[in-house]
Image 1 (cartoon, rainbow, N blue to C red):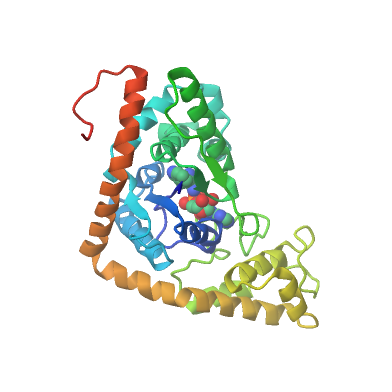
Image 2: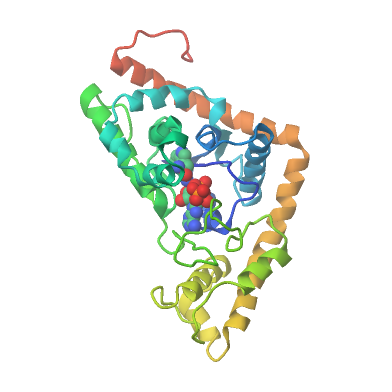
Length: 336
Ligand code: ATP
Ligand code: LTN
């Protein structure tokens, strides 16, 4: 069985369509026939200053949505990053073998730090990829399902694993990024050349899966398109329509060609209504299920704690071999 690991930051009240199609949908599929670990990376979320009540709420809401979207705690290990101190401990080791220049070249760091300026950029944003490498390598993951934007962080993770292995002996499995081409990048409905993102300046082009059907239908109907009439996939001249075709196709299971055929001679209005309908049908039951799970907070936290205990068995073992390989004198923190 292949080991899978992925993570998501609890930085919003609701996941958006990009998170689902770019990441979580594959997580659900990969539960079958693999040993899958999925982590809510709350420590990573601390790189963005958040009100404590909001962080807590978002962490639980993320867990509820992941389960509602199809993650089954019986078939995968779902847990919260901060429940295991091993993540921070291994993260430090990777900070000690990552070059300063190497870390400075990470585009996520460059983009985010440029936006807020050096004085307002926290060091945690700089060391973020080393903590992410720890998330992955602690579990000896073979595959890491993520969206296209995470490719560089996975590349760094591979480099760090190889660097450590060649210096200190085989300790980590070198993981591979698992990026699904078709839906790897869902774009903003208002700016179809930019990725759909919770940190977008405006929420008007972001489909939140917990939003009401009305709100989402309205957003889809006012999606920016070109001045043409044909429903045809062409990312260059029709980025808006292409994005909507990708969304429809990924949710309905119909191929792009099938959809192009279906809408020959019909206008953009009809097509947008169809997309809105598919989105509503798909996410209405998810919203109900997530709300139900959130009502029983104690039960939800218990599921996550059980996940952490399963994760700890693997993470603790990897940390022990790492410490041994480095020549750190063994303490009593390791499981028998
Ligand atoms: P931000 O844009 O504020 O950094 P985000 O909305 O991209 O946040 P993350 O928590 O960083 O959300 O991403 C969770 C997962 O969803 C990642 O694997 C990421 O690659 C994927 N993802 C996020 N946005 C998109 C998108 N628009 N299309 C496809 N995948 C996406
Ligand atoms: N950086 C990722 C979230 C993340 C992650 C991980 C993804 C943290 N640790 C480990 C995969 C594996 C993001 O912003 N989407």
